[in-house]
Amino acid sequence: MGNKTMKRIFGTALLGLLLAGLVAADAAAGDRWNVPANRGQQSVVEQIDVAGRTLTLGGTVYSVSPGARITDSNGNAILLRDLHAVGSPRPADFVEFWSRRSGRNGMPEVTRLRVKPAMKF
Image 1: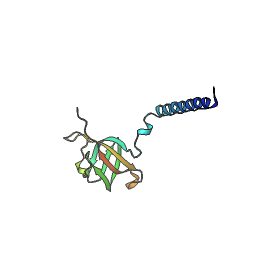
Image 2 (image 1 turned 90 degrees about the vertical axis):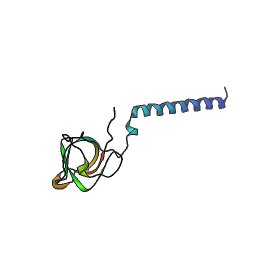
Image 3 (image 1 turned 120 degrees about the vertical axis):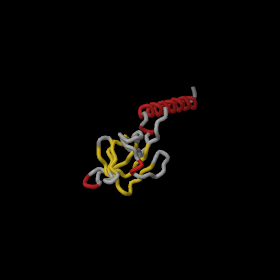
Image 4 (image 1 turned 30 degrees about the vertical axis):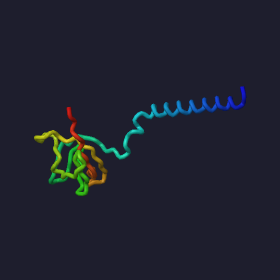
């Protein structure tokens, strides 16, 4: 065989090996590449204290800063009193929230909260 043919065979084999490696790396990564970087924690609203500006989420009491961004499932701004907790006449809200540790009196503080859409069956 000629020198050109050997180069083509080697190039094709190398390209095939490279593609197989990329497919294997993608399969090994799983969902890690599809997760948004700015994802918050998710929880059900267990208790709300509007006067004290606190929320209980996942067994932890969080302070809600006055500048916290609270939105409904459509992205519209709502108030803390518009949320529904466990034990209210309406079903409790499932929320995604972002927090920081340096809140009032060392209490963790919610900086952003978004109500997740209700599941329909």
